[in-house]
Image (tube, rainbow, N blue to C red; front, top):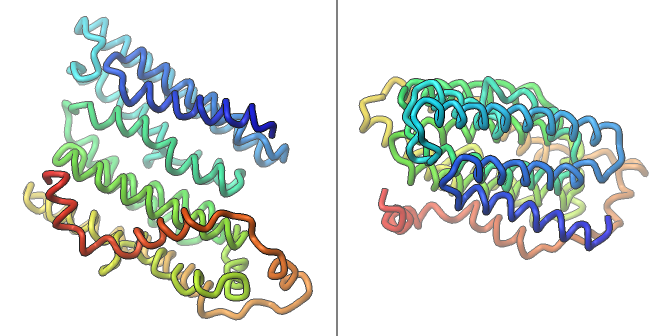
Length: 348
């Protein structure tokens, strides 16, 4: 792609998210989401592969549906209450419609079915943008809405953690596994959103760090399915030693960074006298943990096939920058001891 066009698209991507993050009016928020969607479509379709084009069309249709529902809900709210302000959304009908529209845009269950298919059709770099940056704008809007019916967020959260764990069990494609992982993590965030917005934001930040780290590891190894992970030893032995820790951090095992948000969320749910929901959510995390352990096993405890086709990629050095990967991997593994500091900063 022409570097000038790429720079324009990336600038538009940043602009769309920034407009949504800084807006207090529903029309501006909608406009930012639309700019965001339109900017990423050429990046998704740049491979000129039938699967990439198919993924782009699926993504466009789902995002357009979400944006249209959002616009309809905000117009309905203005009609019923006379308010266009995001923080003033008070009518139960429009609030529910907005929550469902934003759930569709970020891929919460049961509105998640487009996400694994779209992510599977993209390369790892665009998949990284889709799994991280594209979640920011809709999540910022969700943070500002005060739901009139708290049950809807709890149901969306539990369904997402359950479906995210269950759906990833039978997958062999890494991008689909990461898509289900994304749905499960977003479920944890939505579950705690109404009780502690700052904790939901902390969970989002740790999710962004861990997911970016995982995508960059797979990109360095040029791995797209579980079998290709077995060749990692010959490409980057040191990184292959650390990757299981990154994957287990995504699963939420102590003493890794991923344990921090899960621990704090379960604590907060128990404080809110929702111990059964906390127990159920903790059990759904075990489903996700299983497929992370599967990836760990494939990467570290299996021998790769030593045929000519298998050894060819080993001789090609990767041109990927390693500084972002090193920084994110360190943060993914080692942030848990800083929990008290982070809690003090977030005023949890």
